[in-house]
Amino acid sequence: MAVIAEEVNLAGYTTLRLGGPARRFVEATTEAELVAAVRAADEAGEPLLVVGGGSNLVVSDDGFPGTVVHVGTRGVERLPGEGGRALVRVQAGEDWDPFVARCVQDGLSGVECLSGVPGRVGATPIQNVGAYGQDVSETIVEVRAYDRPAGTVVALGADECRFTYRNSVFKGSDRYVVLDVTYALHEADDSQPIAYAELAGRLGVERGARVPLKEAREAVLALRRGKGMVLDPADPDTHSAGSFFTNPILDAARLAELERRVADRLGPETAFPRYPESPGPDGAPRTKTSAAWLIDKAGFVKGHQNGPVRISTKHTLALTNPGGAHTSDLLVLAREVRDGVRAAFGVELENEPVFVGVSL
Image 1 (cartoon, rainbow, N blue to C red):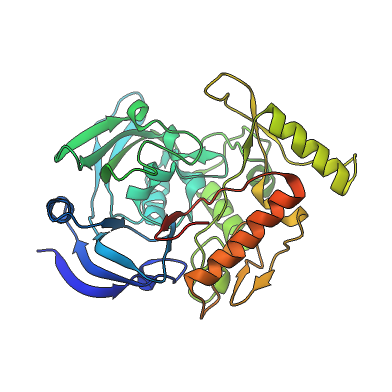
Image 2 (cartoon, rainbow, N blue to C red; image 1 turned 45 degrees about the vertical axis):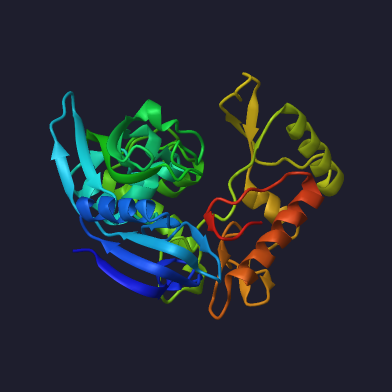
């Protein structure tokens, strides 16, 4: 039986340690309990919020006026594969980093650069979680989900998930509740080619090189710890939702405007991070730049504080709650940063975490 409680404070279920009470809270530990809890809320016409690790949530101080379903399903199943490829089906409630550690231990490559990412497996396709040159969209072959309007369980292939940068068919929509995810991994002792320059530098190899899986994982964890991006109860900088803003993707006109503003503000010789991005829907070229760089150059340094919240002392892209803050405080800081970057560079930053009952 699923565990049901009333007026549960959601701050205890988010890595920001922020958020008010849920009117009704259901702990679902099996797929049947998860589907039943979602179906019951829908049949009652209640607002529904599905929560996993809470690492990507910003919840209102007022809480949530409906049913919150906490996904606690467990299970990792190795499926038959071929050609050196291993299929692994993972329940949505499994914690992500222990799964990555298990893959490294078992000689399965493809997610090693996603070590240390907080949260649970069910969130990975929603956000198309990525870090250090890997995205989960590179390995996901199927997502089983409960289709709420249809009242049925469906299986979506990778193409149907419509993955793009930090986005998917699941994000921004209440239609699907992820039940499990199947990953296609490579049976290998070495990592996939190291694609991220900072990680390659840490490992002392050229980009495109392969290293033992354990070495790749340890290097990623070290980099993430240095940025306060590995959860640690003793480190206030980890009381965050990770990267608070996505890296902006600019069309040619907006890129030219950014070039002009950077030259005016920092000098014509100043270079800024830029990376080729896939073309837009119209086929026009696009360029990705760094939100962290823009924040820093707009004058928001590490440790910048506004009331009881601050930018991480280790990484300008994380907004943190050292303790005693409210969600409203966090939003004040987020708006200050967003507006400052817009004023300085004409770029509109967009939040990466999911907002519940609040907005910028």
